[in-house]
Image 1 (cartoon, one colour):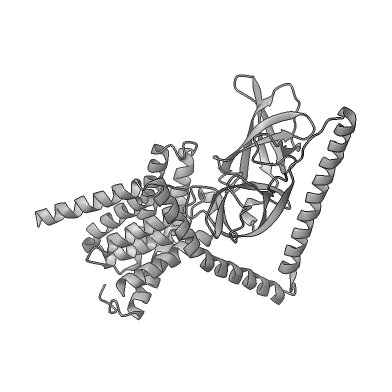
Image 2 (image 1 turned 90 degrees about the horizontal axis):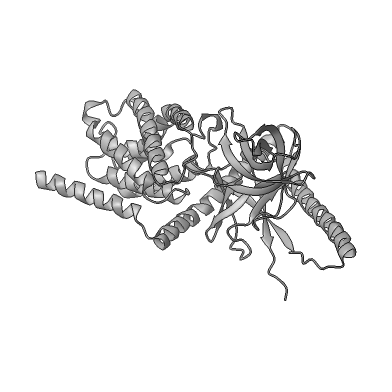
Length: 272
Length: 168
C-alpha cells in the first residue's frame, strides 16, 4: 500500500515536471492545436452573441444597427487610413521638393478581424482574434481600430492570432507627443481598481512642456508600430525622481474593454 | 463515458471562460469555470480521474494563455489533491461546501500562479495589491461560479448515466 502511494506521487511528480519542461516546439504545437480546436466553437458562440445583441436591439426598435455600425466603422477606418496616407504623402512631397531627396515609403493595408476571446486567466491583457490563414498576418504587426492603437500581434495559429493590448505591462510603444517633438516610451500599467486602463510615458525630455490633453501618437521608431496612429491623451504629468526626465499617465484612445472589430496593419511585400 | 463527459465539460468551461469578460475592477478576475470542474471531479471521483481532470484543465488554461505550460497544471493538481484529501470530512454534495471551496481554491490558485509567474520572471511588474484584489475578485466569482459549474457537470454526468442521483 505504501509502495503504491509512493509510485502514485512519483508518477504525478514526473508528469508535472514534464509539463513544465515541454520543448518549445511541442508547447507551441499544443497551444496552436488547442486554439484552433476551440476557434470554430468560439466563432459560433461569438456570432450567436452578436445576433442575440442584434435581436435585443431590434426588439428595442434599433434593428440592423449593429450591422450598419460595423459597416460605418470599417468605412471610417478606411477613410482615416486614406487621410493618414494623404497627410504623409503631402509631407513627403514637401520634403522631396525641399531637399530633392528620395524617401521610400512602405505601403500597408488593413485586414479586418473580429474578437473571439480574451485572456483566459486574467494575468495578461490579450485578445484572441480570428484570421483565415492569411500569410500577411505575422507576429509584431500593429493592431488598430477606428479610435486608435489597440496593440500588437504576438502569437498566431492557423485560425487565430493573439494580440497583446497596449494596457499590458509587457507592451511598449515608441510614441511622440503631439507636434512638440517629444519622444517617449509608452508602457501599459494594467487596470486601476476602478477599471480604468492606464498607460505610462517615461523618459520624456524635461525641457519640453507637455500638459493634460496633449495627444500621443506612435512615432514609428522601433519598426513595429507605423507612424501617426493615435494612442491616447495625456492625463497627468510629473517630473522623474532624479529630475532628469518627465513621466506622464496616458488615457488610451481606444476603449479596450469594448473591442469587437479590429484591424491588423499588414505589411505589403516589398515591390522589386 | 466518464472521460467523454470530462473532456466535453472541460472544453466547454475553457471556451466559456475565455469568452467571458474579466472583472476589471477586481484585478481582472475571470470566472473560474475550469477550477469549478476540477473541484467537481476532486469531490466526486474515487479513482485518478480527478487528477486527469486537473492536468487536462491546467493544460487547457495554459494552452489558451500566454502562460507557459505547467503553471496552471501545478495549481489545479494542488487544488485537486487537497480537495480530494479532505472530501470525506466535508458534505461534498452540499452547495455551501461548494461555495466555501470556491472561495478557498480561487484564492489558492491565484497565489500559486502569482508565485510561479513572478518566480519565472514573467510578471515582475505586478504589484502585490493587484494580486490581493485579484484573489478577492476570484473568490467572489468563485462563490457564484463553482456551485453552478458543479451542478452543471453533475447534471451532465447523471444524464449520461455515469453516476446515479445521490451517489456522489
